[in-house]
Picture 1: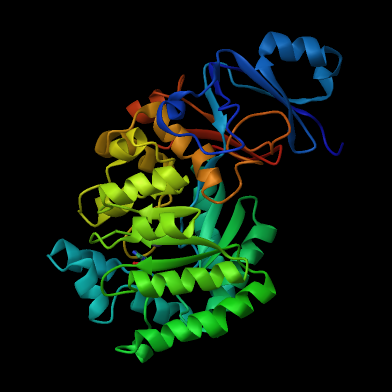
Picture 2: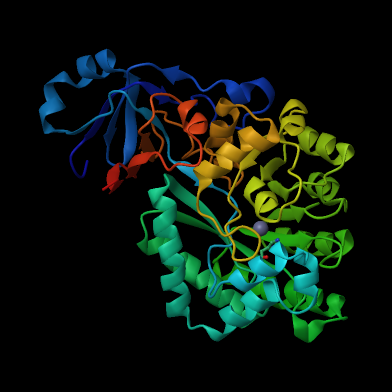
Length: 422
Ligand SMILES: O=C(O)CC1=NCN=C1
Ligand SMILES: [Zn+2]
């Protein structure tokens, strides 16, 4: 096995989340972190080899301790690497101007319908060379890493044409190849109807379905296909057509659902077998029930609601209804310009009625299942990728109690230390 073993020892709390690799956790199981007090991990070849009390690990590897890189985690919390299953990471430019417009009363949709919003970022991203988009996106990915995030999903959706959607996706693929943080790509050509197609949405849907999806699938630059199902963007009928087309080409469906108005997005997600339905601030009780029945992961984005000064999705209701709940930053220049998944967990507790254990489950194993990676990341179990974080708090409750801070001290990715707080 290449490289030295890594021995992380004697954590005040080691959150394993063991036994969650086959399916996302729901209901009461979202609270069962399977903690080990004084826990240790032995890592070799980028893989978790053994997890247990420090006594167990020292007995098992006693003769080899001297050859290992040792990190003393005494007094600190060790968790799986955080996973962000919903970002619009890859883009150029920013929209501070719109932030001030919204503080003065303009709505998100008003700004978008007058040529700003997604259209503003689309113009900037179309004009920018891939190199510049790569550099700006890499900087955000560096910041994610410093917040304990070891895997992110990244959507296209600021190209809105085959040429520029492919440009975004190629940047995401390049970041995945070169950056320590793993990047999982989602095609989202159906993020908005571009200005050139204003008033002719069905013709744009034709282009997404007939031109973009086949080429994206042929190049293998995305695993998922997402659509902004919202009044004034894409109807449930158009969204169904786009997601069905993606399934035909092997792109698993995801959906931005019921963000601004109740619109049947959650129901459509259950009907079509989406991997996840995201936002859900206005999801109906019927939609939530249907998602629970079909095991569709609800990816909740409280940072977006916070930044849009809107009411939050009812995380408590969804957890109690048996929906698998995950959390994400929704990192994007318009409605959630943040990389702080730890702050999103704080909002899960303070604004959505979730518990400290539930939000940690939602930002690790359930987030991993929302991007079909639950079998390889999201928990600290033998055979899984050694993606781990050491936080400078004594327990998982402290991560939420001392809110608003970045408690990330050490990040381990594939068994290698890739960040130590300076
Ligand atoms: O505004 C943006 O750039 C991202 C977004 N898409 C759907 N909601 C927000
Ligand atoms: Zn989004």
